[in-house]
Amino acid sequence: MMYLKLAWRNIWRNKRRTFITMASIVFAVLLAILLNSVKEGVLIKMQENVVSFYTGAVQLHKAGYWDEKTLDNSMTYSDSLVAQVVNHPDVDAAIGRLESYALAASEKYTKVCMVVGIEPENETLVTSLDEKIVAGDYILSDDKGVLVSEGLAEYLKLTVGDTLVIIGQGYHGVSAAGKFPIRGLIRFASPQLNRTMVYLPMTLAQQLFGAPDRITALVLNVDDVSDADRIERELSSEVGAHYEVMGWKVLLPELNQVLEGERAENVIFLFVLYMLIAFGIFGTVIMMTIERQYEFGVLVAIGMRNLKLSGVVVMENIMISVMGAILGTLISIPVVGYFYKFPIRISGDLQKAYENFGFEPIFYFSIAPKIFYSQTVVIFCVALVLSLYPLLKITRLKPVNAMRT
Image 1: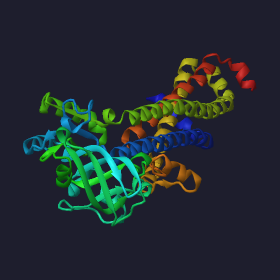
Image 2: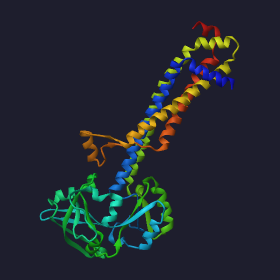
Image 3: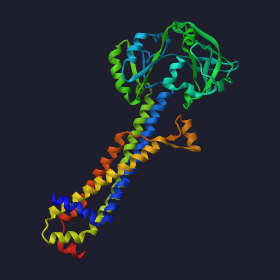
């Protein structure tokens, strides 16, 4: 207890030196939290955005559909199956879709497209499709018209009010052909989706493909995209082998690879950052040790053992490190909170580049608790390791030489 009091008094005996050392730790914690927050925030938002473009976080199909995506592998819409899925505590809703490739045509042009039968009112829960309308109006369940992606409409030279012809193959090989007025145009941030999508009300799509009461997928609206893996495992055991439940990592393997690569890159980036931070803190530790050479020499000369003196100095470094880490975390909370509420928007050429790749030109920040305590713990550990330097200097201290310094 006496040594703790001595260490505490030593800290405030030279306030300027203490504040300089503490400031280096505060800045290190703040910088590490900010950079990790924006990195993780961008990745999480990228994951949520891409998942919400179309696929949703979790889908349920008839077993074998994902390997051979044809209408022959569709399934009958079942109220009992929907009720069983929605009964899961983390699933808010389950919406049906009927999907198939077909040929979209205008008077002079044709192009392969993805025709999707949807439940218009429920589809907005997962993909916010109504917010992507750039011309015309959104469709309703009893509508006889269609929504066409902006890029596809531009290629076919069509606009709102024009007629779109769809030709394809329906359920069990029946012919699928029809003419549909275009009710609205939709714009996706993803260039691929923007060039290929046509949406019909579910009943109209089932009539077109000769597949009454059939769907190809149930898209699940979940509370948190990060829970998709757990929900996939739990539902797979509940619905049985007749169905397959797939999370977004299976539905979008390319996205999963990108995110894993970015997180691995983030580990390397943080390691470099910690190295730079360590050198910054180490500089203040060296300064503090050199300034106190005379003091250490006097204490050893009057009878204080080197080991006990080393313990006191380590206690001082622990106290300063704890205060610096806590203060840095407290300062970072409102800063990260502000950027979480008001993310940084990108403009100019960089904005166009982000949009061309289908990403929002915005730097989002994450407020996950792990970001705060993990960075604080790492910087605290770095500061403690660096306190070994004065410990080694003191154990080798020669009082006469130190008092001459």
